[in-house]
Length: 438
Image (cartoon, rainbow, N blue to C red; front, side, top):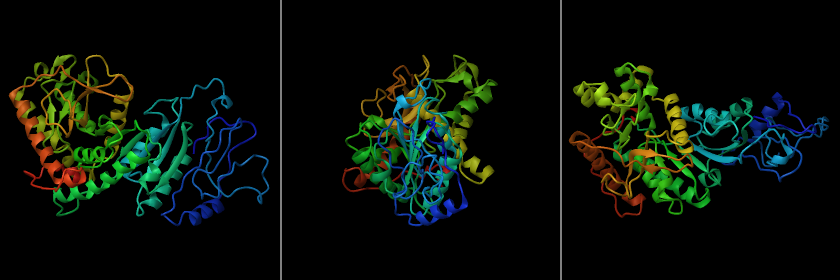
């Protein structure tokens, strides 16, 4: 694991096969939470075991070379945050706690290393990663922690792993909820809503109980819009505005296709909105989009392509990728999570906006309230956002937004018992599950 600047009194520990054997024995029980217990602030930096039993926490001084005295552990962490003890040339920010569920999965396998490298929150932002898995994935979670250690990221100050959200979400300032059950053969969408709904209801309760009161939550596990609604409804002490459903991958796909059609680089495409649900009813909005500052329809004059080919291509892109690749997207999903976070911690460029599935209460578009619906947002870079008011609508756009709204209202009825709204009545109009969820 990464080591920050250590004082001359301490150095890194070596890694031996006997230590790995010790770790394996110590971690054989997956019900035990494995984490790093912070040491009290001190003027000297400390080296501690990153993933070890509760008994193995003591600092390891350099002079303790006697094998009888040396602790059996591997990896090193710097967990004292006395900034005065660090090099005066460093300007570290206060460490932030980031919780990630589904941390042993493919999406997380790409995302965690982007977080640890400073690519997401900045090269001067120390972080602690709190990784949530399941009993079945716990051994893989240990492997993830080992890889993070071996990568020596200076900004990664702490890692904890566990299977209890009430433990892992403690003091979390960002919660990236990726883990969810995939849709199996013959499984109806209503069944998936029920199974994953229970997971996100429990995670919402855990966040409500132990996370920071201003935690920002990004729900990735599908069906992400309704899962985000369930999560926020079970976390009444956290502002509903802090919950997001990830639709940034859909936005990125839309920008790519418009750029390809127009023959420009993707950075010329702006003001791209994905309206509605992360399903095949989603609405990629070319009406308000811009290419090199001009309305999309002035650059791409092929209305039939925009209304049919473009829209369908974005809606079904995940399914096509699966047929080509043999599995659902992971790397591009992790990139879109990075983009979603950056859009909240970086001021939105003047005149532009980004898409996110957010709580609809008070929205200026007439979308039904008490839903999580993807809409255009702007941010000042403080983690918060505001909805964009200067958008236009036509009959084509309104008709499709209404269809997405109807689908989310139907999904909401399916999970009424999980959001405190009585008995569930599940009568989905059609199966619009994205192919990637199959």
